[in-house]
Image 1 (spheres, rainbow, N blue to C red):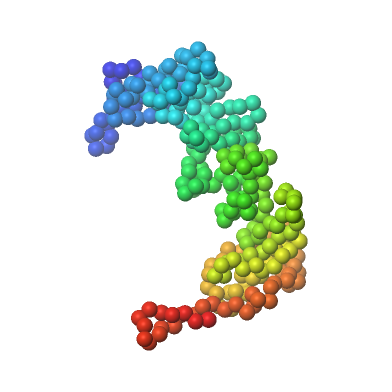
Image 2: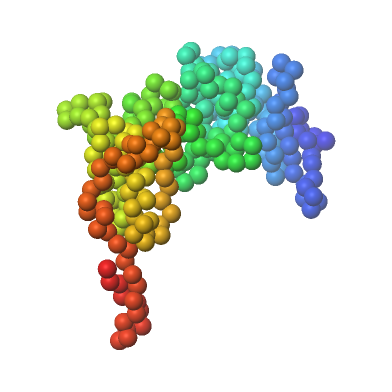
Length: 283
């Protein structure tokens, strides 16, 4: 054991020494992380002890305890203020809770999601927020029925424009299907008038405009079939429409209008020009 209170010496597999520190609060043993030096670990322990022993919330600011990692600070702060321990950086509020990724990235969730996020660490990669769930990455947008291909502002929005506010009342799904874009009534951004079905063929190509999201989703699938029949090899993701039985889907598929121009599209073929080393394209 190290000489400093709350600090323990340990060794890695290669023999390198490092220092772990922890603090006990109301019988709860809380790990504060691992550090290269005993002094660094000791400073973290002292900061943690100071948070727990401070007189009140007005005395607690991360700027005064920056020796401790931010997320560990939030875990201890929540424990002190609410008496509830979470292994993740959650701060309970009256009707919701905050998940503190960093001082400038504070996510908001409804209390209904507390059990889920109390046991899962949120991570960020490439602008996407996700948790590791049973060995795979689970994007948190999936909990709202938002598909992986969804684009903010087109397929879903956060009503108050706060991209970190994930309370259910603040999430509005505009489209649940691939290639389906909602059109808003002029002068009424909250009212959807109809839907465009759009497919990417050397740019976005409008398949047609439809009254319902389901019709537009079927139109997109039909457009994919037409393009494949004409030799396009792109692996388009087709929509699965759970609300339609097989015979209902077929009936809607058969009668769904598709822009005549789509039938005229053909893939670009590649030919070699004998006077050039690089290939040239022709329709």
